[in-house]
Image (cartoon, rainbow, N blue to C red; front, top):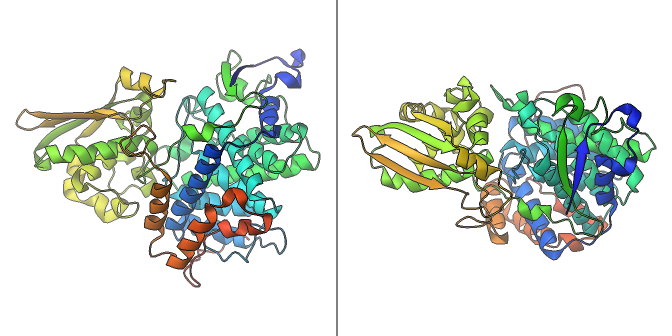
Length: 500
């Protein structure tokens, strides 16, 4: 990996393309280096993971809305499949990216990478797969494209903080998706460069989508990025240009939306001929909740055995990182995070609610743990409102550590009892994390798929998908539609009509 200095330059400096971050990203995407076996294997795991959470969410309202809009853009030849829908029905690829991206993101249960900023790099897969199907590319091409998408997003997330400036993390996702599509299609560096710049320009949005009363847009946002990425690549392929230099310019996103004219970032990117391995540094979720709650859910399961009577709890303090405290903790100062009538999207960003339910139930379920009745239980509300978070400098340091042995997304928990006693414990990483107690492997991804899709698709369809997806790197172009997962006829719901 090579670190690239990224700064703001005045227009009169005429920064050469070779020194621009977007050009360097495009160079990584255009490099036709082979994908290592372990990377290809992990890509298969994440395609399984995406299908799991997408089908589990298939009839939730945002997913229904996105699917209905996509199906209004049918395409007879060269189209892409839509999760839940029979594969012979195809739609335009940008709309497949919209529908499938929303389905994947809705339950907040697919993969994650956390560093200077947040990311769900599995969001790269829907648009790249949609374009692969629409342009009749092979499984090998698809694997190459996905490897690039993961690499670019994760490398940007390592170096450039968005949330500090209240910019949503799709600003790193959209250029990664465009770069991945560029790799998939074997486009020249010039074309990918223009597409990446367009993608950056149109995808800077605010973090209000994840603040206060969180709405369904949390699921739509990465799907919107995917749709924008497909359109950006299409325009660039037709010879259209983009605002440039998009990162370093005098009126660029860095100059006015991030660290400003004095900004200085060091972005790591693979050197020419170096394999794209970033996916191996990401991790999936065992539980359907914001990633920073994963270790705390596992810790709650462990601690509940030490607390015989939860009604005797006086107070619970979660000593954790800046990120956890200010994003999903009491440091966010969001009253909605303590409201039993809050939306599911808000509850899965409230570590106070999540820790209370995990302590009481000893299990976590992607539906049952969020029902209005579950959130409104009097004993749950009482316990929930006794929980607070506090930033601990050591947990913040570990959260940002570049040493994988120190990197941590957990907390130390103090449970203060009414009799003056206390129960304490801590956990650095979730059990499913690569360094956790039970790291996820292929069989765990398959089990997650079968658990989340049970009762939604047929056993025959589940078995078919699991068999096909494990052959992903060897699939021919005409077989990529087999990566879709369909529900039985009549099982898909439809929503309110819109314009389309």
